[in-house]
Image (cartoon, rainbow, N blue to C red):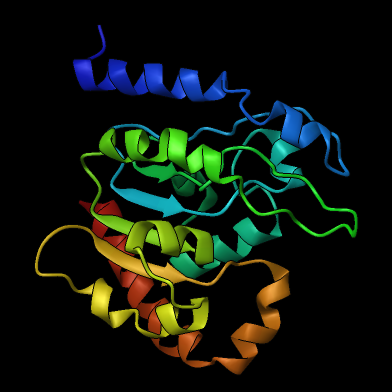
Length: 208
C-alpha cells in the first residue's frame, strides 16, 4: 500500500492530468489542439526542473523535454537520459503543464497563468525532498524567485542562490531552446562558470 504522501501526490498528478481549464483557450490558437497535461513528479524527487511549458513535440510524446531543448538541458546538467527521466529522483514541473499553442505568426504562446495559479503551489508542497532546483527561463524565475528582473540579470546573479545557508540550492538558467544560441555566445561566462558548478551540484544530489 502506498504511503500517505505518495498517495496524495498520485491523486494530485491524476487531477492535473484530467485538467481541461484551458480547452477553450487552446481551441482558439493556431494549432487548435486539446489539452494534454504532461505531469512528471513524485514526492521522493531530489532535483526539480522548473520550466516554462511543453512544446509541440512534448505535446505529441507526452514526455517532458523530448526535443532539442531537452538534449541541451541534459548536456548542461551532465545527466544521462535514463537518469533524467527517473521520476523517483527528478521532478519536471513547468509553469503550465500543457502546450500553449502558437499565435497567428507561428510563435510560441506564453504559459497561461491560470495553470500556475491552480496547481503550482500544490505541486511544490508535494515535493518535500527537493535539494536542488533548476529555474529554466523567465516564467519559472519570476514565479519561484518573485523577481521582475530579466533572464540575463537573474542568471548572471546565480551565485546568490546557488550557495544558500539552508534549503535547496537554486540555479536560474536560460531556456535551452535553439533560439537562445546567440545568447549563449554573447554570455560565455555561462558555459565557463555556471555550467561546471551546476554539474557538480547535480552529481552531489543524484549520488546521495
